[in-house]
Image 1: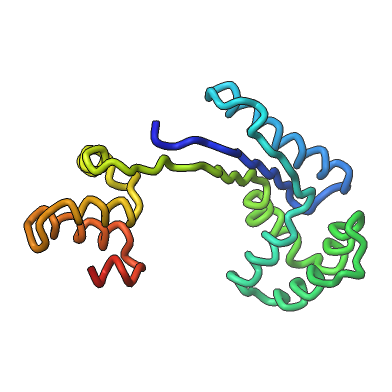
Image 2 (image 1 turned 45 degrees about the vertical axis):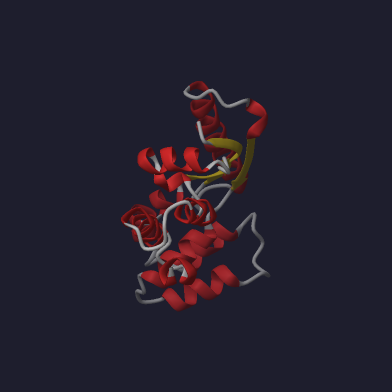
Length: 183
């Protein structure tokens, strides 16, 4: 109840194999199937969904090769990065150029490249009333911002157990924030 979903972005990916036009169809289809599933199982209006697709996840393959170097990885990465290779025939040329590596990549890596990524953009309600902040802190403190916790801490006597509890919570919730840790 404290969050309002503004947008659900879905992006479907296909692995770089087979005809390019088929990969376009697969990536679009993967995106639409996930969208239909989420729509069916949620109450979000259809207007908040944004969809896109990537016919061939060359970036995913590139990242895998960087993280899992094997013989020929540098050459494969250079091929993937070459902007002169036409996208419509890139997978055929890749398969021809790297015939030793291709079967293993197809079996082990390409299934990982067939996926749908999602991003949910939302707003979390802001609290201004100290009593309401106090109630939220007890049930769902992660819904509070540092500023809201600061407002609550100021409502207690400085140095009191409640005051220290609020600032300790802020440091726990925002461990990388200098101000939260200094307080």
